[in-house]
Image (cartoon, rainbow, N blue to C red; front, side, top):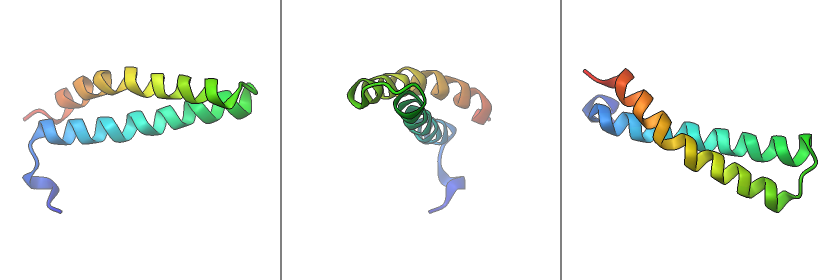
Amino acid sequence: MDLESWKPDDNARRFATLIATALGVFVFVALWLGLTWNPLMAALAGAAAGIVLRPLLALLLRGMFGR
């Protein structure tokens, strides 16, 4: 896979998805194990965090990867 052939929007979208997923999983584990939330509620909060952060990260990364 040639990363240089991707457009800046492609890079921003893919990395935003990757980072938002990792942060969503972190939120899930932190709420579930750290604050002893119900696993279902923690999973919903983690998913919501990922959904909210993905567009924001895409905008930020699009600005960083812009040429």
